[in-house]
Length: 307
Image (cartoon, rainbow, N blue to C red):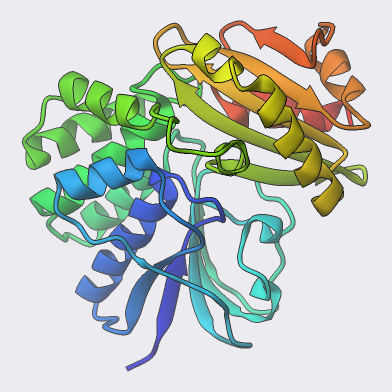
């Protein structure tokens, strides 16, 4: 029985965790009994809510990877966002919905990427293509990821396909999309138990453009002002992160899931990139970004273009 490790990116979100679990389910139904899902960090409260709601056990944390290990990457392809040593592994599949970046293999592989709002939307098609039934639990965590990544269809990353697939999965999971969706998103806005250091690492990703290291973290909230009460502590945590990881610009997106806006805390020696990118001035290390909710579509691309 060949061992295949399946995992998403570091600082995992709901899509990263559930896609790993769902791909394990799919691979085993395709006859690959050695497939196993892992995570590259602790799950957040939103993901915890989804897994508990559908009675699904979270995957084990992957601490390291051996050379030539067979892996399937989900919800990412950039090695900077993956486990240390990934470049020495044998990547046999990638299922993703992000731009290709920092990715290289020595052998041919199965690579499936689509410009949709969520990796689970792509995996849904794989179930259909292989005539494999999706059970209630799997449908539940799949639709949870789509709700999360599209902010209940409010994000500009959301496509008609995401909406269609979410509705199909909601029927299987026996949930009301709007009711369950708001419960899920609100579960992820409770930041009271997190230290500032933990908060900036809940959902954080790194990209590099023109030798500029750009770190963008995102937290969801129902009240931006509640988060900003800890701005001084948050800034200290960000500056510590910058010093430790050689980051040129760090952006923390504090996203209001109710009104679909974000307040950004921006620090680093290249914070000028954000001013150039958004055409606004940073005031008190902050910038209000009206209508901005998607890091992938509305933040990373414009920062990288102006780096």
